[in-house]
Length: 102
Image 1 (cartoon, rainbow, N blue to C red):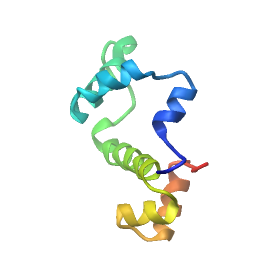
Image 2: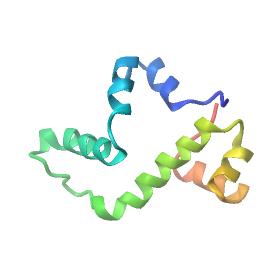
Image 3: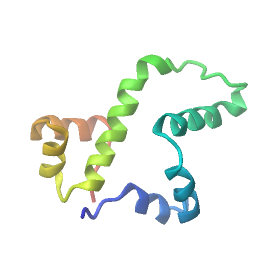
Image 4: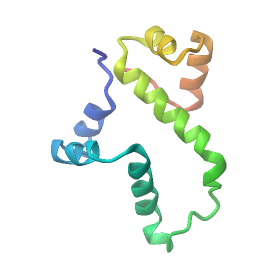
């Protein structure tokens, strides 16, 4: 298993705990995203001023899948293979999304 884990990282930062993970596990990915968007806009009267969410979804999804690939593979080569992209494209994606595997 990978040394990198977004779950462990967030636990270390005290942002999540096991109880929250159980609750998250009971949600669909669509529900989880909808909850996050709703929470993010609560203070803004449910508006995302200046954020074109529809057109940004592609980047948001790619970043999430990139982080996931790092958490379920042993190394960057395996993560690139998992995603079906070249090592060069994988390195470019890491740089684009400012993600580095420890």
